[in-house]
Length: 132
Image (cartoon, rainbow, N blue to C red; front, side, top):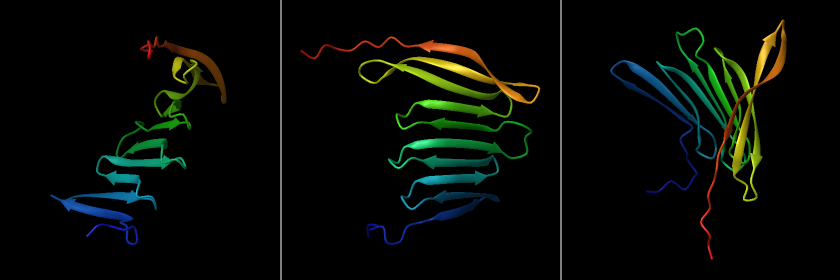
């Protein structure tokens, strides 16, 4: 019997071999959280069901926290790590809307203030087929 959306799973737990885990879903049935022995993951989506934010918090580890954030064009705009700090990304797009250059901006701690400094620049050369 197909699920008509009237009764959707919001979360479930599994136990196999003594390991427990949990998965959480939103009203659109998109996964929003995963937890288990490895740690916790959180996911947030835009109105268009596109992944907008992803975060990882491992259990039992100092550091190792990561988060990623995307914009409505599905390009990475921020990466944050407990080990390396924050990086922001700015893009240059071509006439077809594809990014051709990404500039990393590293936010460095300078006596309690975050100071931007230029990081790596990635350049892509895109070749399009002529559709004539």
